[in-house]
Length: 100
Image 1 (tube, one colour):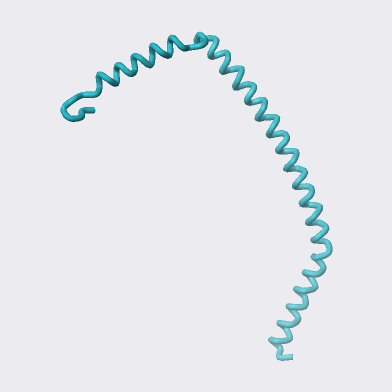
Image 2: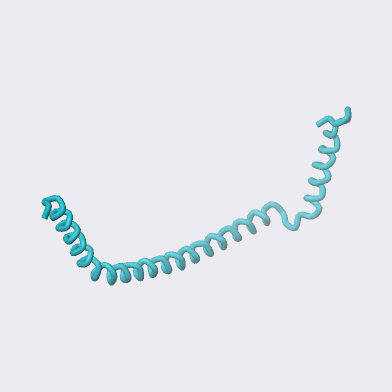
């Protein structure tokens, strides 16, 4: 960290020292209180995530059920149509291959 023959390392150390002193003066809680606060906040955050995941799971299950209902309505009518069209294509190809 030398620029124009001048080292900036002492300025770096002074900055670290000032930051540490400012952190000590402006720290709102002690170490134990801070750890307890962080623990409580993380537990609350996890609870919120679990609730949101449950809601998401319920809505996803509802969408899957609706999708199954829609597909069953469409498939029941179209399965016969698909089978009939496949049979018709097979018969047409057979006629073309036999020359009739």
